[in-house]
Length: 321
Length: 246
Image (tube, rainbow over all chains, first blue to last red; front, side, top):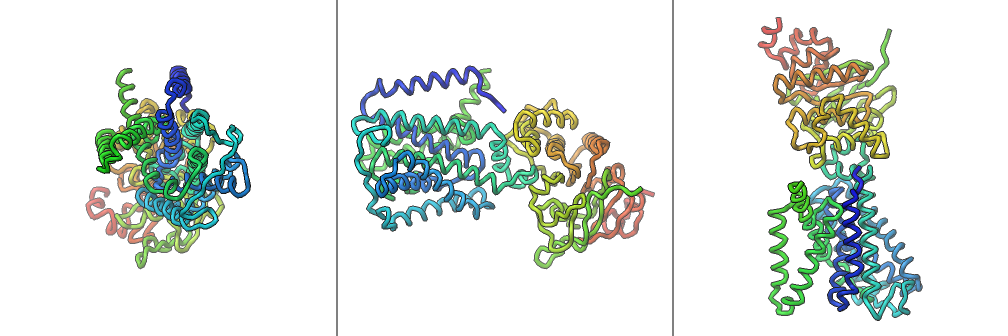
């Protein structure tokens, strides 16, 4: 219903130009690496938001889609020399299909029950991959070194191409989310989030629309998985399939503001630097103080600003008018 | 001249464990009629509603709508066929504005947002909520929430509208407003089935009344016939109503 205003489009373009210029100004690897993580987790949070923030399915199993994406493209690359870009599409499709296959029997699960089922899903995938010989089981897989090129989705001399690729992925996710939020589907998702009864009485096929939300979310999350595999060139279940990744995706979305297009990205821009910096500065002392700071922040936000930072910003924005 | 049949409920039984919530209930609704269903709490009125609208699956019996059997159909499919309903406890989408709520309902018949908004605006001017369209649904009074729920039901463009206690908890003035709205809806040629406790509303709007007690239909007739019936007085209305009524 709402189209972007001229002012919103202008600010989007300004932010985009700044982001494009960022790695040229800050050319050290660490800031670029942090930005890459922000974009990657931002993208996954945007994808979670379609399921959780709009359609009300609080998934704590997103890491399964991430892992399936990472493993699919890597497996096909290693075994059959399939181009990773093609692997990315295949990984997305497989993640969507598995998401739908798991989502269908969970059609009537809501709230906590859906969350519990999704944790189980993530853990089942992790355990399974840990024991699956074909894909390296617990030892994981090392990607072959290919020539550095965009076509090979592999760059050795600089992080810059990775930076721009994941930025592009994030923008694609935001466009998808904006489109979903403002069409029939988005309104139907919000009705389903409110209650299945209200959705049914408006003639909405709840099962079908929930599956669509899961599939879109799974595809985008799997894209991030393939990106991660190409970026790190090594993956094992304990690095790409663990529950804390799922939890972090949910926290980022909630902190930024679930149910708004931009909220999750803002959440990632706040949480990822904090977690990276506290980890680098305090993590090696073994006191776990980085996690303490992290936890305290999340508690504060959920108590005082349940609508997230985006909710806070839009309240201020409304008052200013 | 016989009118066309809108809804036909034939021998519907719904059990919860050993409890018969509905037992062999039959009645018909003709096009353009307002039929009220009354009875004491626990008589099975809402269960009957849920069976007709696909929220429950009846254990036995048949339900047809406009000549087509709808027994056991999914709720969203029944809605699409043209039966809209409201709930005893108001069901609205709390984080949407009034207009967005009605627009979401209107999307059943449109794929694009713009025509759905136009339809929603039209419905809201009809139900008298258009001035409040930008408010959040949660900011409305209970009377307006009920009005919003009726607006949402209308926006799905039904042929049969089923209202579950849309007058409960309203003040006198609000009650008058709701009765007026129901009459206005009927003037547009809508068929209505209404579950209601407020007897003065039942008397005023109904063409026919179906009385339920302990899951069974005990009587059916015009409002005048029903209020003087001994069994109905005993089961539901009470002796006092008789005194005042006669």
